[in-house]
Length: 254
Image (cartoon, rainbow, N blue to C red; front, side, top):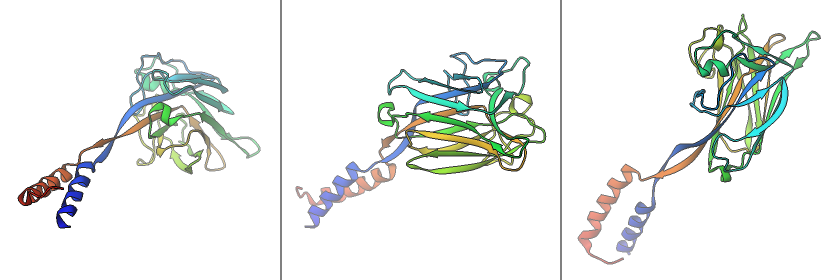
């Protein structure tokens, strides 16, 4: 019996692996609002996870569809509505990241004190067809207001739990002097938010100020699809070697 147990252990060690994740493809949208002086070309690279083929979302509201990879997985629809829009910058930009961060749509508090929310809807992300196990969502948000705005951005999409993240804008604004991307979840102020480990095929974003005044922008979104890649565990390899040595001493067939 003990020899059979050893054989079973060896079999499990051969099958056991650990997993890491690799980027499969990305889908990115650049919200121009009603004015974005500098436009991204299809070969311009921008974003925290550098990507090309940013799809232009022109105007304060509308819809578009497309895919940044070879088209496998079908089309992805994006709709948006920004009761407020504009641009940070306007002079010649220095890089594509700054171009992407120029235009925005935004939610704001109107003259009556009511919050007018900016919304973005994304669907349908067919994860199996895309070859994704899950995805991360980056929401770029900065409109260069002074004093900086304190806003809320909520992501809603089943089966992932809804999540509302507080976002304190960088005081300078990306296109007006802020140096690089700053994660507002780990910085006192920033210009993007990150939602991780998502699987929802359809989701919405809702942006608005957290107080009785101000506004909250969405400059762009970047969806990064990941696939889990099994890898042999180095620790298991050591255990396998030790088990194999003990097994050989007994020379008993499984």
